[in-house]
Length: 91
Length: 205
Image (cartoon, rainbow over all chains, first blue to last red; front, side, top):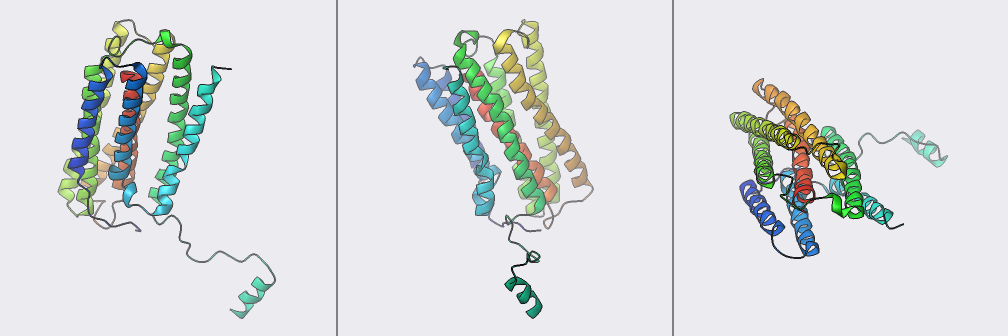
């Protein structure tokens, strides 16, 4: 079985970070700030959390470069898809 | 070899070499990553549709916490994060050859994942009793479509985890072969990752 051997990351520290960021999201969601400010902060926090899960829990940080490219391949397509559909309602 | 060289010189297609570098991982893991790539596009289609509908019809949505119960969903989000750490601890255990740890953490993951599904069912019942049904305009249809498909993925994940746990009790995994644990772990963390995005855009924005 081919595999990449590496020391275990500190999974509990990642878990604590995810929990703290979730708490921060709940705090920001109900702040009396402008909606655009809240949306940008909340999406930024969500992407940060998602990245931590991918890098540490899914071990992308420790995988071969080729697999990392494979995992990242759909992301530009996802961005293009979302960008195009958000243009739709303005036509 | 002189014969092979002669073929090459004549520009005839040669058979592939015996061993190609590939992605550097075993096939099951590669297959799961390709599948997860298709899942990214699936959920992107749902999220993209949600964004266009929401931007085009902003009055169809209520402010966070008005219709949807944010506190109970926040607890559910925390549960899914907990299940991710128990899953990765199961993986670490089997890598270290700690098979009792593997079984313990897998059971914890199954239990927490099942609780997530149970809380989602409770949430749906509560919302439907309040009159927030899938036919309740764009808000209802997009909410139930996105969270429903995610809940379906979690349910499939729990079923697969039960199967992997059963195999773990049969002694099918070891420090030398833990493919099944790692592959279901990738799926499970992906489901957690998708929920992180959905929780933000469906419940908090």
